[in-house]
Length: 246
Image 1 (cartoon, rainbow, N blue to C red):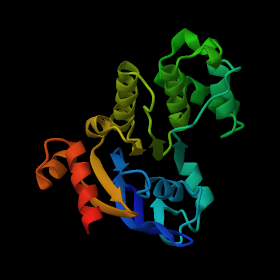
Image 2 (cartoon, one colour; image 1 turned 120 degrees about the vertical axis):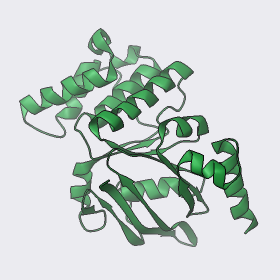
Image 3 (cartoon, helix red, strand yellow; image 1 turned 180 degrees about the vertical axis):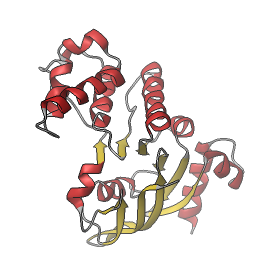
């Protein structure tokens, strides 16, 4: 399986704090990789370096053959980043928002309409796309944002807390959307979440960070066997506590 992302010893130093320390992992084509850890573990710093939002102190990440250090503009053409706090313009209709966002990527009117059609099919909001976003539920907004994020067919979609604040039904629908995009279209995902049930359901592999270091990587079942745990929450707890002891 071809790697869409190769993280090669990424580190970030903030004054006296080493927020990320020699982080290394890879994500294959169509793979869903979850990066988890407690608050302050270095997940967000790592994601922002991969997203070219901040420059690494050392190391590099290669996205679809492009270096985040040497070719950040090329990397941005290959990725999409949907942060937890992302929002949409409430006074715009859903379809107008999609068309506006598509116009930021291209001036080709035919391509814009192609992106809008694709996003409309992914979010499955139907006639509600003609309503103002201000009338949408949180779940509807999140579906719209996810569709907007992947309508340009990025090589790598980076999602931070994709179902935060959603009810069970909407969260399940978002997870199914992610799995379908990976399986049917080969979209690769880097996901960060505090919901271990979600991580176990949606991801192919999991990486657990603590104090800036990537402590372990593997499939959920492999990690549960390795740490003699019944679920991913127990794995998470043991990895973090082991790091605190050492």
